[in-house]
Image (cartoon, rainbow, N blue to C red; front, top):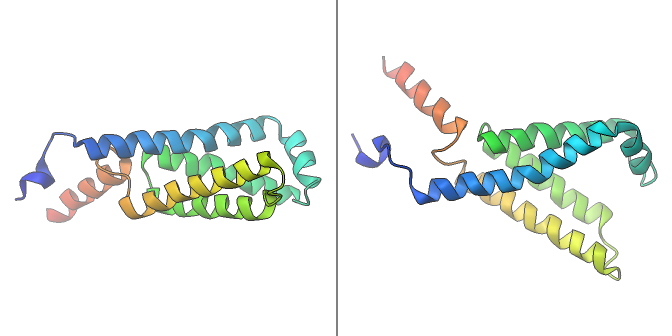
Amino acid sequence: MDYEENSVLVHPTDMCLLFGRLLLSLLFLQEGAALAANLDAAIDAMGKLGVIAPVVIATIALQLAAGLAIALGLFTRLAAVGLGLFCLSTALLFHTNFANHNELLHFEKDLAIAGGMFTLVVAGAGKLSLDMFVQRHWKTKIAF
């Protein structure tokens, strides 16, 4: 058996992945909860931008479900792909007026968050995640 595989110690990399996941997920959980709490206002505001109500509801669901998944480290890669593509779409569809400094900042912020999400796709959630717990649990079940 490999020592690293069975080590009880937590590597700093896993702590950084946990901290990064929590920071990234916080934005989506907070925004999704705020939109859900003010659903009528969110639908009205997004309607003015040409976004129909079912898309607003799907957006809220994505933010809450994928945000929670990333925080917990469950289906992390899938959730990160979804939120990464969501951020790219948001940047390209809604924040392209670069003459407006605020829009440029939102565009850059969305690109940076997408970059963080795509990094999670490659790195995974780390040892401090439900993904790892499930993987270890099923390894043990299969071994018997």
